[in-house]
Image (cartoon, one colour):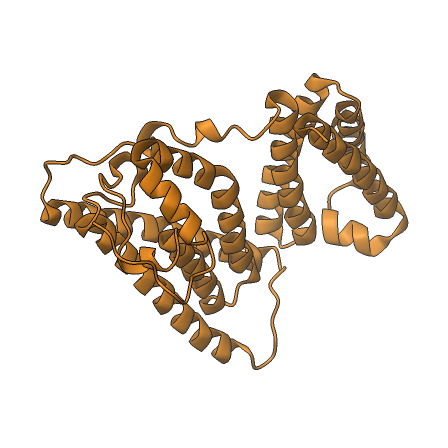
Length: 308
């Protein structure tokens, strides 16, 4: 099945699911309360049925403007319902479902319009793959790496999880297991520390052995097969995902844990192919040999020899 067909298939499923949900809204009070709260279902249906259900059905049969309309409406409803749920404490489940629908619609729209996921859009601006200045000293690379770590960890491991936890609580979709929170916090600390060690070790290897930083705009000038890169091809990504899971456990937030896992999927599908293509173009056979020796996500118990 082609990428375009997969996108149309998704819109078809979305149309059926949307229609089934609206039937449930009018027949099952629990569904109406959990997904709409005090919002008037009649007014919402007059807007949502043509712009979401019908538009998704038209997108499924190949009408491109309908795919754009359905996705735009989905994004608008996701934002509006998310704010409504955060302010009122109602319709949290509906807001959560709309987040999933928004992710699916955007992905399906990309498949329908471009025939695939536009990975090239990832490597632009500050995220474009460029080697670091080869004349910079190791100390300068370490300093720049430290700044990048503070910035990225601050955003992705502090700010975003805090925002997600806020909405999780306001939407009243948090899951509480009696007596489990102290153990989750301890496990979170251990997991976060382990992930951070891997991340710092990886960054240090990039700066000292590779002459670069983790940031795509200042990538290592030499193929790094040292430190944790002797055990797994992408220890920085592995460490980041482990850190995210640790933060989720610390916050007792299942949404933050899902965010970390989703980040792994996004990195693997969007970023990894572009990054590996760049590495192969720059380092050729040595990288291809290295790639054949180690897996991307699962560390090897037998490290490959260090190379310089």
